[in-house]
Length: 118
Image (cartoon, rainbow, N blue to C red; front, side, top):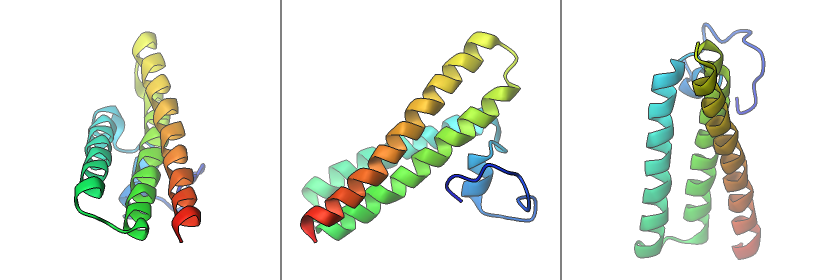
């Protein structure tokens, strides 16, 4: 689901992460998902400081938005093929690459947090 590269058997699949990572939502809706993922990231950071969460709760939340942002990055990369203007397609691919890298880093940070505190 995270790094799915083919479109086989995805027409019958109703999982939104698969559709998101394959770019089937289009550029606009995928950017909306990116904004939502960033809001989720900010909320997790804010609430983890003030809510006194334990390490497992923070690691689960960080892993969740890491997977989500990685899928958004993959979806933006694939949806950027539909953009006709070359400069907008380039900037969308840059944002897609940055968000995919940030998502993978968040996943590794969650794993590091688990190994550190558990």
